Length: 277
Image 1 (cartoon, rainbow, N blue to C red):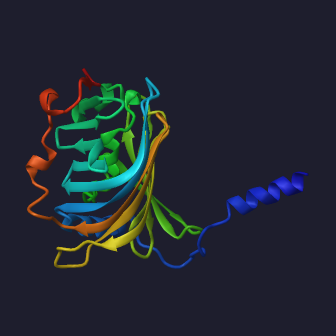
Image 2: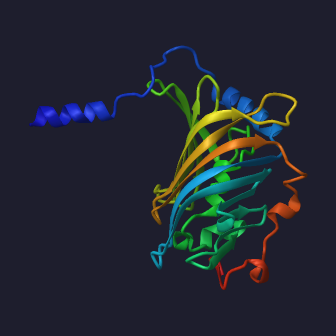
Image 3: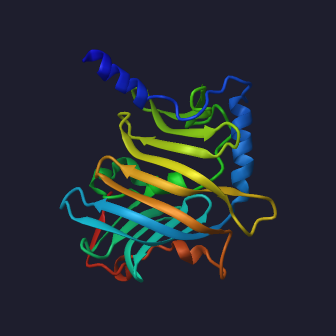
């Protein structure tokens, strides 16, 4: 009985690709290459499809469905994801340099919002989906190449998965803590997985990124993941995004107006919650 169970465990944890034991780059070189590539992406306007199961952790109301999604991006925290089913908006997940917000206009009829600068005081666990974390994953801002500046990057190499595993650390009052971990493919330096953590080391967002595609509109070739599989353990929410049309911009969008905070009167919902009030 024990041998059968252990054999099954080995099978489940077997590497998904051929191990690599050749030469690798230093942390400084890896970050420099990623920074140079991401700095080119000054704008994104992408479209595709989504499949979502968004759970309100307080009421347990669920927003589910499959439909069309639009992604807008400008450095650094300007990100917006709008999902629609047959033309009706079912979620609006957004962030700009100052604030982040989530609008679920259907069953939940609610907007949650907060300030980035007050994220440490926010009741983040009350959010079905955290827009500030989505911005961390889909916002393709160039990483800081200063190896001693917080959050401080550290590098490990995973031979079995053939990828660089970079963690970013911050100093708290009584200890150091891991803030983020990203797995980058060794050959392409495309991100394959992102883990974001709270101060106690718990995962707040797990994201698998795959199927990189070329983004049109740039003078040099720019590649971006076209599939995002996002899971928020605190609420149980998850959604998958498949981008099929990746452009630098379209019809002038995105602009600064694309990431303008709607305010209570233009949110289109009856209930507005400021989570860091």
